[in-house]
Image (cartoon, rainbow, N blue to C red; front, side, top):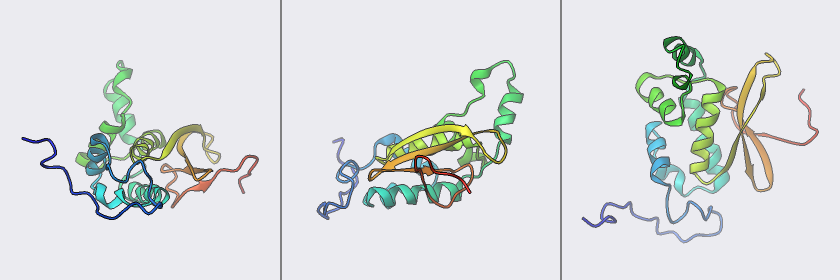
Length: 172
């Protein structure tokens, strides 16, 4: 069987300069497509969007589907107290747990999964770790660099969209 026999049809539109060259024309890799499907997101819905719109759309879809919760992480620790390697849930385990059990995750699990999904879409995405200013507890979020701007996507706090990061900025 020819390996291209079942390849999805390409969008016949020419690249008009508004699409990200990394995703347009070649689609997403198999891992990214698998992860998107695990969340119930059709990769074709995102594939031809400009990078900023693709990033914002995935973020909104992610936070509308995946709940913030930390009970599943606590359960992992309680079930295997002597096996720290069993505690963390990497992106694929996190997404499978969500698909099969409706679980969400802590800010850490959500941030790492979102970062991996965004990177798979061609976004320059990185996790950042700090503390929640309201609770003084550890917290993770995702920093994205788009069009010369740094943006904070925080699925653990369920923000509706990105927050601009400005050096010397303050919180009010």
